[in-house]
Each structure stands twice: as C-alpha cells, then as structure tokens.
Length: 351
Length: 283
Image (tube, rainbow over all chains, first blue to last red; front, side, top):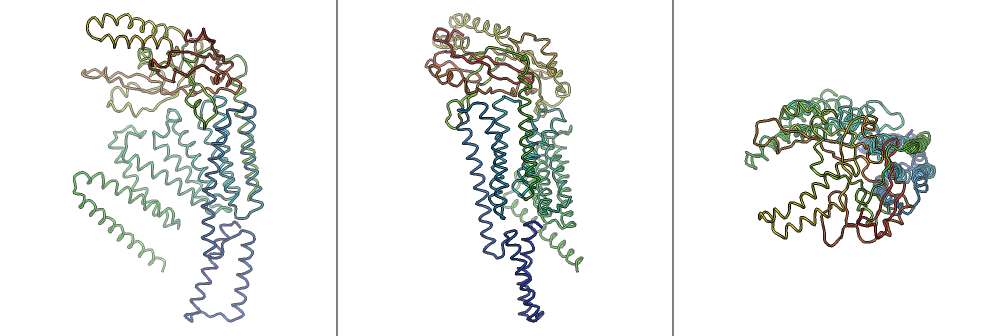
C-alpha cells in the first residue's frame, strides 16, 4: 500500500463515521454497544497504523496543514534550486575545468543520496520532494554546463535523459511534481524528434504544433495502463498528454500556416476546428464511460474554449458588444441544459 | 520509497556524464579538423564577461555578415541542402515562412578571398567619397564620417566569412582543404525571399539562403586564460555582430586566440595571448 491509498482509506473512514452518526440520529441504523466498540477500536487501530506508517492526515485541520506544508515545500524547492543554479554560475569561472566537471557530476549524485536519506527519516516525503527537485536542477545544470565548458553541439537527447532522470525520481517516491517535470522534458524530446523526421532542425520544433500532438498522444498512452504502486499517475499522464494535444489543436485552428499539411491555411484551420470539437466530445464521452473525471473536465473546458474562440472569430468585429456577450451567455445556458439532460440520463441509467 | 529507481537515477547520472566526457575526448583526439589563430575581431568577448552573476568567460564566434558576400547562398545551394525551392517559388510568397530551418554544415573562410573583396570594396568606396562630395551627394561632414566608418571597419571588422554550405563534412573538407583557413561548422540555415527582386515585375520571386545561427557560437575560455583577458588594456570597442565607429573608443585589437576544431567539429581554445602595445590595432 502507498501513502495515497492509505490517505483515501482514512478519508473513507472519516466519511463513514459522519454518515453513521447521521443515520443513528435519524434512527435508521443504530449499532449496539458491542458493535460500536468493536468498530471504533478497529478504525482506531487502522488509523494509528496508517498514521505511523504513512503519516496520513486524520482530521480536517491536519489536512489543511499538510497542504500548507506541501506549498511551502514546493516554493522552498524552487527557491533552493534557483540558489544552486545562481551559486554555481557566480563562482564557476574561478574553478579549473577538472574541478568544474567533478562538482557538476557529483552534485546530482549527492542530491539523490540526500533524497534517499530524507525518505528514510521522514514518512511524509516533504524533504524528499524538496531534495528531488534540487537533484533534478543539479542534473540539468550538469549537462548544460558541460555543454558550455566543452562547446558541445546542442542536441534534443539532453531532454530525453533529463526526462528519464525525473521519471526515475518520480517513481522512486511517488512525487507528482517530478512526474510533471519528467513529462515536460520528454514532451520536448518527442516533439523535437518528430520535427527532425520532417527534415527540420530540432530547435525549430516549436514552430510546428503538430509535433506536440504526436508527443502528447505518446505521453497519454501510459495513462491507459493501471499503476499498481502509484495509482494517481495514470490521471496525470492522461491529463498532461491530452492538454498538450488540445493546446496544439487550439493554436492550429487559428494559425494554419504553422501546420505540416500542404493545404491552404484556411482549410487547415477549418479541419483542426472540426477535429478539436470531435476530440473534445470524444474525451468527454471517454471520461464518463471510464469514470475518469479529470478527462471529462478537460474535454468540457476545451469544448467550450473552442466554441468561444469560434464565436469570437465570427461575431466580434461586426456585432454590437452587448449582443455578442448576450449570445455567449445564452450559449452557456444551452450548454447547461444539455449537460443537465445528460446528467439526468446518467442518473436514470444508474437507478 | 522504491530504492531500485533511485539506484537507476544514480546509474543514469554516471552513465550520461561518462558518455558526454567520452564524446569530448573523441572530439579532441588526433589531429584537429581545423586549427586557426584568430583575433579579437573574430572572437570578441561576450557581454557576460562584464556581469557579476556569471563568472564564466566566453568568446563569440563573429562571422562577418556583409550582404555582398552572401551571393553564393542562392537557390541552387538551397536545393542542394534539401529545400523545396520549386514548390515555394510557384506558391504564395508568404509560404516561404512555412519552410522550416534545416541543419547544414557551413564553411567559414578566415582572412581569404572574401575578406580581400570586402577590403577592396571599402577602399573603393573611400576613394569615391570626394567625387560624391563634389557632385553634392554628400556634405563634407558626412563624407568625413563615412571615411572614418570604413577605415574603422578595415581595422575591426571580422575577417571570417561564410563561403559555402553542404551536408557532407568529408566532401566539404576535400574542397576546402586548408585547415588553417577554413572551418566547417554545424549551423542552422533558412530560406528567405528577396522582395526587391520580385517587386514590380511579373517574374518569379528570387529565393536565397540565410545562416540563422551557428550551433556553437560561444567558445568557453578555460580558467588558465582568464588572467590575460582580465589584464587587457582599455575597454573593448569590438562587439559580436557589426561594430559601429565611435570616436570615443579607438580601434584596438587586444588579443589573439589559437582555436582548434575537433573530430566532431566542436571548438576549444588551445592558447590565448595579449598583443603587446605595438601590435595593437595593427592586427
């Protein structure tokens, strides 16, 4: 069992206790003293075990403090990473090449050892996550400065190894922040590699949003595989990959000249507009069917965004502004009605 | 905490560093692909030299981008590098911006024919200034300023010119065999439209190539050469790119650098020395 699973169970116990109290108050279900005592002692021992092993949050106040600690750890990690970066740049000129290479190579190794050490001492992994981000920064600094020292021709492969490193740290301790860092690097690598297949120089990968459609699709794939140890990772894979695809489509539906397709920009934009609506609808349907709420929200957001972008294109210039916003408001009401009907249908299906 | 992944991360760091350093050794082993002695004109200090937040020192590979010396990069050369010249010529002019840059090997010539042509043009233009002044095309003040500017360029402009491009390093080296004059470097090249050629005529537009950037434009200066750079006299008047004449900063070339370009066409500094007082400005 991982910390997330233990936390979910602890949350379920809390919700069960509240519901049981209400049921007792309403006289629907009243447990006798033995049952009650047995249940309370079982839950208490379970929660004590989780608190000891995983340092889970039992009450609401603890949860709020945990969030504060997470935010503090994230901001601290960012600041410390920046400190490492600027510290090195401030003094590296005064070091010989051998010393520079030794420091650059050993810094990420020391930071990874620090992650291990922190994880052994602290179950909440706040310090481990802080050190993970520092380790990642050290590794990025390592390769980029080695490239500067030895005047190495830049290559997209750096993104691949940075991505792999961040992924290894993410899977070691279940850190979502490192998974996002890893996916971002891999996105850069995949998009650049796809660009080179079309004969362009790798650093121009940002000039063709279609590179990100391919990269996003590849990154979303692991989201279809259940993760035994880190059950929240598939959500992130799916969300991140599809977010990249949706943004790329949004850009192409307004900037056809940025496409590989050999058609006129107008045709390309129209094609991507249609594709965007179809994909958003498909993602909403998939989210509902597979009970992936994240996908449903993402699909709905982009469906509305595509719709409003299109309405803006059509009407903004020639329509009075009050009428434009009135139509936007009415379209929102229409969407609400459609969603309500779908919700009612879903409820009917369940009952 | 799953320690197998942490060990994997440690192994990855060690492996990647080893691969990078092996690549550096491979680049520097054996006879270099090119070995040149350049001056501050071709390798001025980058602006980071004067910043406190970055103590690293690097030199900028300064290629002279005089427009008259770009004629070799024509439509035929673009086609050789893999650009679809015919398709772009037949289509909407704006389609040229849809063509992505490509990687190519660019040949840089140091102190060769391109520089001699550039120098000759400057001298001819200086010689033509009195006539322009007599004809009333220039005031005496403007003619004097232009003369100063051109003389300044003859003293400080980079003598490094791009003279060719290709995709095969071996073939380029065979054609430009002088390793003390020609450097081959990976670069990013792009297709452009010459709008002047297509304006007001029904003929098809003319396309030309442009070097968008050299992959390794900054050359790192190791610590052992910092002392020479820090004790240079005066403030530099040479900047990466075009340096305009400024009467307050006299033309002065203060150092020379021996640069090697290895098997992977990556450069490194082998020696750096200051010019003594008599040599300054003469280089």
